[in-house]
Image 1: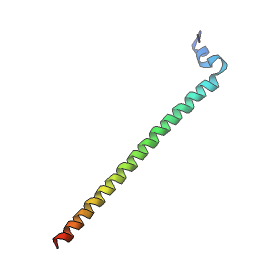
Image 2 (image 1 turned 180 degrees about the vertical axis):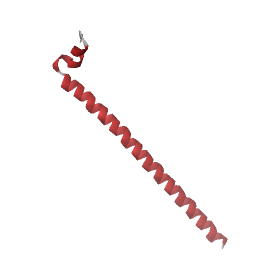
Image 3 (image 1 turned 90 degrees about the vertical axis):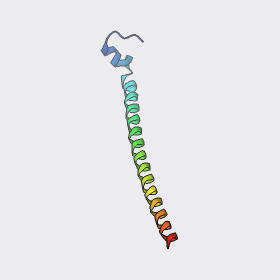
Image 4 (image 1 turned 135 degrees about the vertical axis):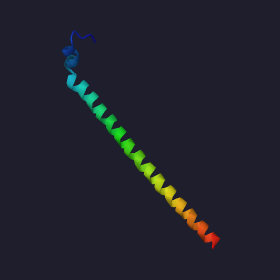
Amino acid sequence: MNWGSLSDFIAMGGYAPFVWGSYGVTAVLIALEILLLRQRRRRAQQQARLAAEFNHETERENDDETQN
């Protein structure tokens, strides 16, 4: 397509609500995906940290029991 002005470009030949709406929905969904991935990553790191602490404590308790 060839647009003569910025307003023609924004109007998208009469299909502006569909074109810009789809861009808007896509941008919102990509941002939401990024936020959810960050949240999931933080939760996984937190669970891994807790599991490592638990394993470390369990190993220490087992070592104490074998020494007695």
